[in-house]
Length: 327
Figure 1 (spheres, rainbow, N blue to C red):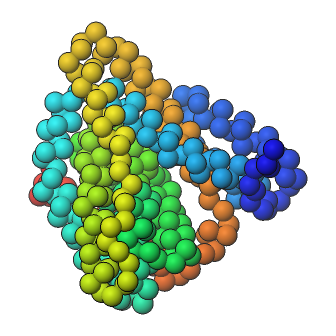
Figure 2 (figure 1 turned 120 degrees about the horizontal axis):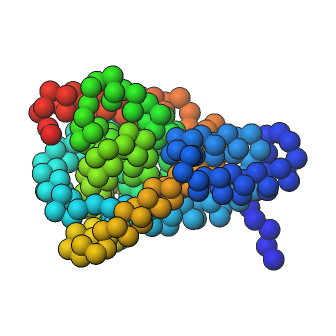
Figure 3 (figure 1 turned 30 degrees about the vertical axis):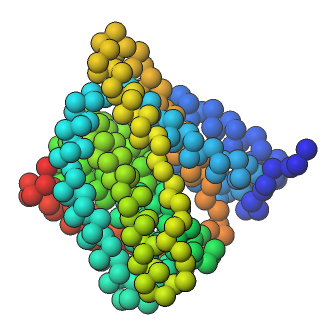
């Protein structure tokens, strides 16, 4: 039987990580472990002892996130989901366009390679790692550029999970406003929902709905990036296949069931509670997937680009929400 892939431990015997990681994963299933704590626990263990299950945790993360999002749908009212999704189309388009335009400007300003800058910009504009993975087949960047873009987005997601709730409280945001801000300004769905869960109230419903609506733009953006890259003489074909976020259909189906079959509402709230804790486990696995080599690979200029673009989009969206330009 083939041994699991390993990442080099920083200190302590390798056997410690084989025991601690599974034990910590089980711990994340208990309600007293929050989303932020789950992420922090995964980060600490991976950086201190390495992750002997690195390939496995990376493979299970996307599936577990999809299941968690579907489960969260069981606790929501489809009528509210539809209203929020339709209402958010305009500022979703505006937000994506602004992120891409600023990303192009910052790419030149920080003298980052065109493909790498595009990857970071796309990840910021829609949904982080999923959007980056979707445009790789049409952009065809170098392997290290993909790794750097993913690592940059991951680091900023980890920071956002801890920074956004206190900033939201300081700005006096309501549940709905914080949910909207999280969906517009945090990269990955996992961190968006994680921050909203940490905030509480109606923030989860708003954040999840708006973020999933934004995720639908992955497919048209992928083809647009492919056409742009082809015109720029990149030599790649614009026919690459985008990764379709099928879990959105599951989320909507779960919300429809509990909305139109009243007898399922109690069970739906139970499923949603389990899904929230599954999200904690997802964030633990995401944290455990970070390695020291991925941190070193980021470099100063790509990180500066990612941070500048993230702060700009977070600041612009927060100002628009706080001044009631979008609601």
